[in-house]
Image (cartoon, rainbow, N blue to C red; front, side, top):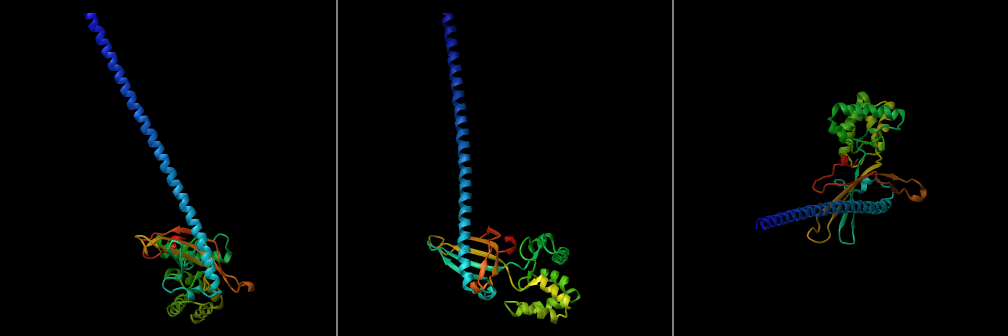
Length: 294
């Protein structure tokens, strides 16, 4: 009898052990399966995000190319006219494009040459000397953040006399006009307040009215320009249908060069260069800070 009981207890213990082992294996298997699913989902999620990023870049690339063609065609219609004379004065609005789905793309062009060139690599000795002095003037009169907002790493060495902020105008005028800087700034501000466009002739007259010497007038023409080459292109897309119809749904911007082609067979057509930068812009900001596009 004791022998049977002992045998029964042994079988019971072995059964319990097997059940415990089986349960542990089931739990381990569940953990392995869970980890496998988790890893697979993570990989899938990463692949999905990667594909989404690629699609977004693809769409942005072709959007940029399409806009380049549309803006290029619009520029040719202007026959080389000063763009500041054909754009809306306050906004820089150039044209609207209606897409196949009813969405509306508004194109704006803004003077992007009002800042000072911070990268003087490859420039002439005189440009390096005068540009370096200008940058030193800016450094001592601005914070680090302000300095970055008032400078750009590429583009012409000349500064747009029309759009130069006060501190850039002052910094450049100190280099070019020397002791006559205040008079020169006053003359430029007078022209800017009276006209939407400052011509090269007006720039020269301002130098003469301020009493600048011939050498100083030459420096003014080396540091300032009335002919803008560097432009910010900003586009705003508004939905054409659905709940968001008419609402701003995306905004992009970039910097490019626009040159006047003076060849006779081109009828002085403006030519749009490739975008040096192209970025998505926050749609919730009221105005676009061009310094963020450099």
